[in-house]
Length: 111
Length: 252
Image 1 (cartoon, rainbow over the protein chains, first blue to last red):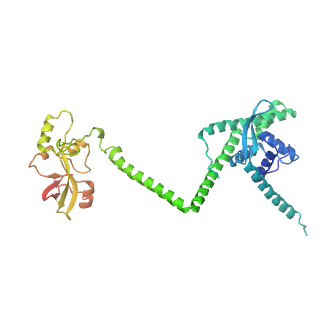
Image 2 (tube, rainbow over the protein chains, first blue to last red; image 1 turned 135 degrees about the vertical axis):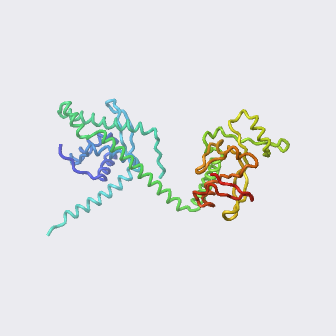
Image 3 (cartoon, chains in turn yellow, brown; image 1 turned 135 degrees about the horizontal axis):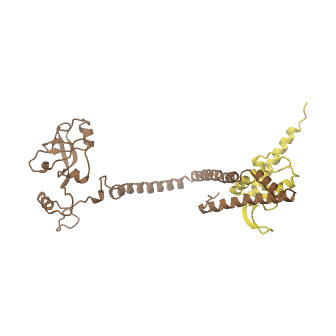
């Protein structure tokens, strides 16, 4: 498996929220999905995943529910809350501006 | 932003759920690796390694919530203060009411504590009793006076108490040896301190013969008086004080 790129806490939060915006999932599925949709570029380590999820839950941006999966097992599913959605939009905007700024600086012509 | 309350009972549940959540992840990861071709053992090992220490991860999750709790608490506190500042009238009334309530409670409690709750500073305080004579004609609210003769009779006929001590408290005039002063004191039988179980810091308690009429007048002074009037002179024992115009020798 390729080495995961370092994700800053804020960015990780943003990604997790977005993944959950697409669909409620449990922790394992979230990290899998993120890997999938980013073409294996973005991988969150198991060690960072759960503390991040728990923090998001504490903030009230995601909520958790224990449900029975298809395999008849109990799993903790996270889903995005209304305040979470608002926060996601805000963070997505910020990220857009940040990314654009960084791109711009990096693309500056060197003399 | 409402204050978020956390039930204490939730904690145990939360810990169990956290454990289940992380172990589930390990299971799923192991399955994934097996489906990718690893042996069960290799898969398990890889999954466990990637998780790192499960206890540590649990700790981190708890921290993520814990630190957060503190932050939210501080945030809520600041929010509360902001709201109070916006309505100073309300804040003033609330604070005044609290202050009055707390003040009144403290005052009453101190009183009740000193008078009713705190045990007397004597050994076996629950065995100390005060006996009062009471004038049946005047009703139970008046304290009569027990005459010395009465006291001697009680003493002779006493079979219920270990010791009986006559005593009365009085304000005395203290003259000589300094500016005239009015002190709260007592006229007591010789075994007063003995009955109470109190020992003087310096000196001795009274002797039986000193209770006899026409014996030399002796006095025991309080520490406070010793410090204020006698400047805590260690040679104060044997000095003479003039009380109500009569001389008394200090013995303690």
